[in-house]
Amino acid sequence: MTRQPDCTLSDDLMRMIAEQGLDVLPELIRIMLNAAMQAERQQYLRAAPYERTTERQGYANGYKPKTVTTRVGDITFALPQVRDGSFYPSALERGLRSERALTLALAEMYVQGVSTRKVAAITEQLCGVQLDSMHVSRAAQQLDEQLTKWRERRLSKTRYLYLDARYEKVRIDGQVRDAAVLLAMGVLEDGKRALLGVSVAVSEQEVHWRQFLQSLVERGLSGVELVISDAHTGLVAARKAVFGGLPWQRCQFHLQQNAQAFVPRQEMKREVAVAIRAIFNAPSRTAAETLLAQTVQQYAKSASKLAAWLETAIPEGLTVLAFPASHQQRLRTTNGLERLNQEIRRRTRVVGVFPNEASCLRLVTALAMETSDEWEAGKVYLSTTP
Image (cartoon, rainbow, N blue to C red):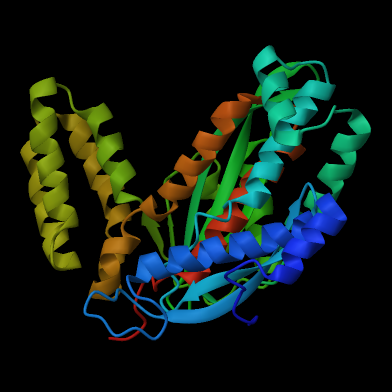
């Protein structure tokens, strides 16, 4: 924990500015931004330090050093903390790693001659320098060292494992291909979430998934009681190969969507959705299976394909009923990864087509690191107490 930051410019500092000019700029930035962040925390808490007031929203918890690379060098700021970890000052730009990764993706497009005027304008604004392959390569190497270390870090015991995938456009050998972005999220023993790993590759899905899951195990993943995922092509086989002995919860949200493909008439879709929700919301596995049997029988003649699908697919979404009732709501789906996927989509939309797999992996990893840091400092996701 660092000392409380200075809140005003001292006479000595003003004299330094007059004597040294821009050489003292890093110190000026440090003091000014520390003061701005401290004022922002005070406004957030609705109370000054040591002030007694009924409007207080929380309590300060000292300062945490944070070193940021700027155009005038590395500057270490005093980041104000709040006890519950819910505060982050907007005065300090958030997402530095992911912004660097995004800049590099655009820069790679630029130096490879596939940039548009829009990309050139963005890279000039973000980088502030004329780009060449040496600049881009050096910056990518420095950032990749941090990101690789995070992807290869040792994992701790994980109670619940969530898996999901999405796709990004990547240019390979002059062709635009679909690269699978694999994500693994875990709920740890303390009840908090963590992003366990990411992987990007243009390859056969089952092979990619199997290699990804095996890498989690090799990094120390253990203690898993339940795997939650959709029935992605390739994932099912890979999951059985690596985690074959573990219970599997198929995402109920995706099951609801999948069911609509088997409904023969538009006017039936709402009633089918209601019937499936009733099964999922049943208080016990026995009650859910009773409702499922009734639903299958109801549609056996009017929608035989739907009935057959319900009978085989819906039980895959009922595994959660064997777990603590207080956990079931968040174990039903993979929606816990949706925020990260939305953020990935927002950032990758700027790039459009990544110049290579490494560029895509760099940005996705940076976003995953930042999200995982937020989760670690945030609230408990699933309570570990009865």
